View (cartoon, rainbow, N blue to C red):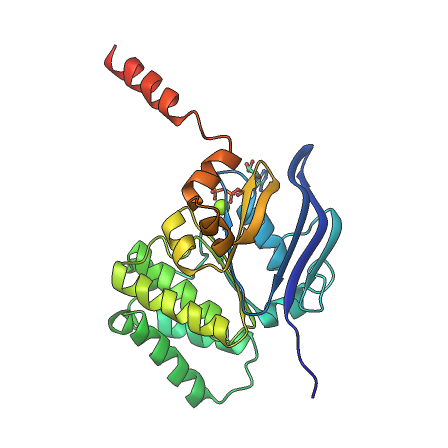
Length: 260
Ligand SMILES: Nc1ncnc2c1ncn2[C@@H]1O[C@H](COP(=O)(O)OP(=O)(O)OP(=O)(O)O)[C@@H](O)[C@H]1O
Ligand SMILES: [Mg+2]
């Protein structure tokens, strides 16, 4: 029996925009069954790294392997095995969700019958509570509902790897809970889930492993269990590693400046 291993690996990865170094020697190994949280302050490089894994942005130096493909060389293959929800989803506002899903389904050349695709679309729409909006224009939907449309479209081809850039943020509590359970089920099936969030509680609840990034570098990577077994919580570790320990001083100075 051939055991199919799925992994997302970055080795000595560098990315620049102009002269500015955005990702600086990233080394990560994410394997099947992982729910992997990417954490880090604004601008630390999370979205840039996720775009590279999803094959929508080229890296400059190093080695990246997504399953068996290099995203710089095989972006088309990567799109078949990856479901990617970008930070700011690009959706066709003048289509309805149903038309959009059918369009995405046909673009990806899914080898499932139209009936099965319809069934998958309807089940996902029901689970995330957007059935009633399926025939409205996407342009008329709320922020969170658009987010759900983007999430559903990333799942239609049953990808082995899911890359979710702050995708839980806009969801209401019920949908967020359903989506979190779905992610856990998918990871048990052996899929890889990589997601970024600023909500440390979410990371603590559902991630098996996290990487904490700061200024383009990975400052910490490890299992969530290891953090809690060291008698620390994720917030403490995060603030320490991302040079955010002067918060009290910053708040004091801010208050003084506002009230003076
Ligand atoms: N298209 C671009 N051109 C130039 N610089 C960019 C571009 N996109 C991102 N950057 C820079 O790259 C750095 C990392 O940005 P990135 O979006 O990856 O951060 P992030 O960790 O996702 O932040 P956030 O938490 O705010 O989403 C930032 O300094 C940003 O200004
Ligand atoms: Mg980002």
